Length: 84
Image (cartoon, rainbow, N blue to C red; front, side, top):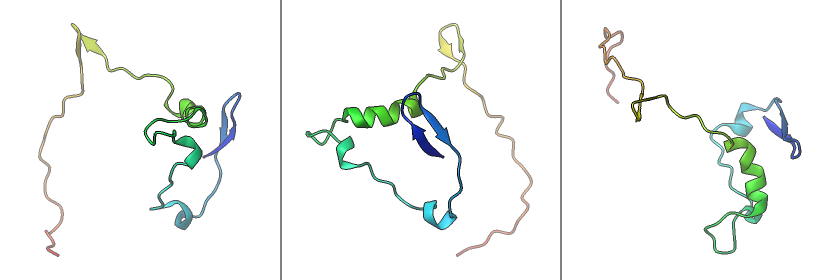
């Protein structure tokens, strides 16, 4: 995915070599970090807002979040244990 435009926000899906993107750390540009080394700048907010916009609240029952409950069912072992 590559950011294409800021206003309105658009993006496109493209191709990349796996070796260029896998296990590669992408750091924030210096102009995204405020002078106090703690806050973010307007440029950072402009970049991040489309990525984090919106909320996905869980359903509630009587004011309590109704989260998924796992069944915790054991499954049959299919492989031998390998010690390294």
